Image (cartoon, rainbow, N blue to C red; front, side, top):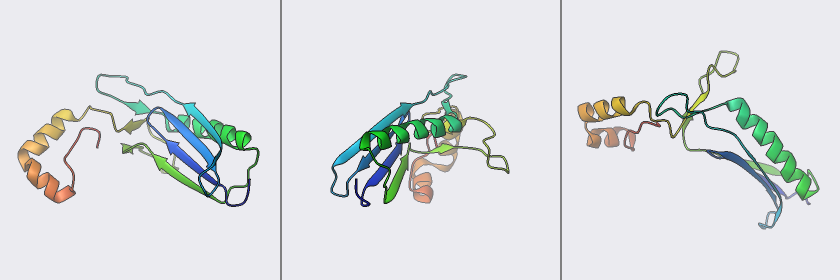
Length: 133
């Protein structure tokens, strides 16, 4: 692997995928590790941010091992849509992350959209309201 090797990390809804590739696009190594989504109540969808990190470490190590080198020039990171990770002042999570597929605020979304109007919400925010937002 040359110094122009790149790493891509994609934290998806059910797993993290990591690749190491040459600048021209040839994939040199890859790794994947999954994590669960908790649904403690109806319409809830939560994940443990520490689980994201543990899975990222596992997948990154697998990608670097299969690439047979650790000479990375740059890293690109992408993540699953939107979500909320509420933090203590020291940066530790207060609770599991509420991920994009969570639907617990559906009644609030309906009430706000009815009160403001879907057109006004779109004008103000550029997007319709949705429970996962």
